[in-house]
Image 1 (cartoon, one colour):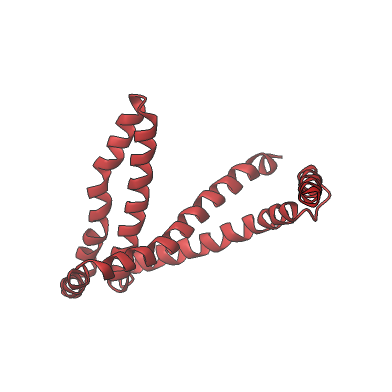
Image 2 (cartoon, one colour):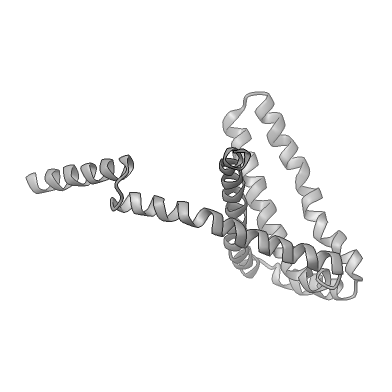
Length: 176
């Protein structure tokens, strides 16, 4: 009984986790392109050289620094939200989210080999990857049902409604 009550919560958490993972995967190449266009490539090589000289524990500090530096931006977003500057608050939080994920992906790419030398971090990394696979498996049947409904293949209300809309659109275009 309790398991059925918590399933929607687990699905929601899985979706949020997968959105974060998707953003991570898709923002890293964007950050790479930005780095390629502005003179950050030299900075990346310089930073990679400095990281190579650090111990794994010190590399962890380098990995955490972007999170700390972006924290005030997130606080600003919360302050704007508290003072009902809705558009500014949402914009600030979205920028902070994308910037945070992008920069963290960039820094993680540089620090990953050193971080994975620490046993606990390697285990945490494997656990997160396993959690990501589990979340994808949990959400996969729901994604299939949504795709089926959007194609109009299913028997549910959404599928029937979409088929009706498609027929209406087809008739409207044929009437022209």
